[in-house]
Image (cartoon, rainbow, N blue to C red):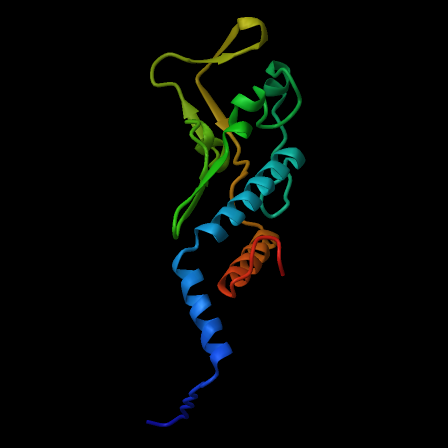
Length: 171
């Protein structure tokens, strides 16, 4: 076989200790994942505040119909803390991190799509308790979950710090 191989034996107590620490820290990523989860929560909150997707592109503006029937002019923010914005959460395990929402309508806002009435019409709520009846509603994708380049960089830094035995907030 052509090529080259290099074998190195390290007989250094400090290096052996550092490699052992790296192995132990990587075996339980939960502390690092908790820190990453907190960062991602802040990133999602910033997306709602700036109404932008993970790449920084503005969300599609509200339709005239939606503007006329909302209590405020904020995109994806209608009911304050109990709505989609306030429902985003994360869960960290030993080696997993999940972030999302328990709101059934969360996916249609993230991915976009058309909702069609299965029978007669869809009833769309209006301020004051009235309803508008429509056959279908098309909702543009307004991604609020995902990783930006900055998020990836922060994640790399956090994982690197924990792999080397660093503590939260250290470099």
